[in-house]
Length: 456
Ligand code: GCO
Image (cartoon, rainbow, N blue to C red):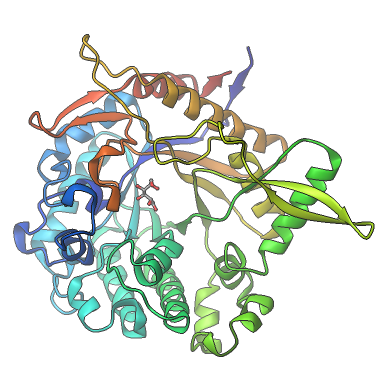
């Protein structure tokens, strides 16, 4: 057995997002969000489930913070519901919306838990969507105002900020495939504009936070880069993997998002490929988007296998499919925990990232409450353990990984899949008065945190 010891100040946390857990969808002056509208539209969500009540975290936040404390988490990554703060997206602040986050953040701090705050985890005010939503640059500027107001109010207590979460989902699932709110199916040019406007919002958000913070703080974002893993450890596959990551800088999966942030421009190849469908951009906007960030937050779930092959004597790479019987999570995602190591290693080789956090990592499995009243989620323990060990390998390469957040603190509303995909460390019994049960994975995580180490 190896004991993987983590650096002294390593941050162990868990994450969740406003729409997925809060409920109280129209309490205390909150405005409608695009997720309220989308989930209330028949046919969009499995079994017609909505986030109206979700885990009722809005009312149960004290109990939830108590559970966070019990697990021993150092940090909790939460997201803010923009329409609680600005019911109309812009204009007048709703003081009762601020009150909720005051209560939550104060409760966290009272218990020595550091809040990591994401400003946008997909619940855009519907009022802004009515005016074009992310198709419209005005939304990026409305986001900057929201970031400013929120920072002014909370930066005496919040020092870790993320602007955006997984922009590629907000744009492509939201405005291209229509599988997530607002459920639009736009043409390529519009989708590219949405992507750019989200990026612009990120950059404006970084500037707004820095200009208004009362304390020294860290600002970054959480993103889901395309992750790849070598099919075997042969020299050929490892060299092919390097090529694949380098090439991903030219295309949508990685380059489209990371090149502007780290290098100030969209990748030339992808740009040329889009031809007349490129978004409207200005040099000033590109400068805003490339404002240096303090950390890059990576959400890690799965990776694609890559193998090398020779053509005309030259090494090439291609995707290698997983075997049919390869183990999967209940989201149908192939399990291969090496994506944590290889993903961060190569992002770090290709970009100047000062600091990484794993801002999400986890899996949905079919959890059941046993006769003893507990949830014995052995497979999740195995999954998380192996990812954490994979993360540990990064230290040998001298990579600055500063923290790890499990997705998710508790079972919650998995977007269009509704409630039956359970990702939590905490089981939520929706039908039984929202009862919370710490799963075995939570107890395992508690030990990891206590020892600052994982045994494999
Ligand atoms: C995110 C995610 C979460 C999901 C999780 C599992 O982007 O942060 O979509 O909200 O619940 O990734 O799919």
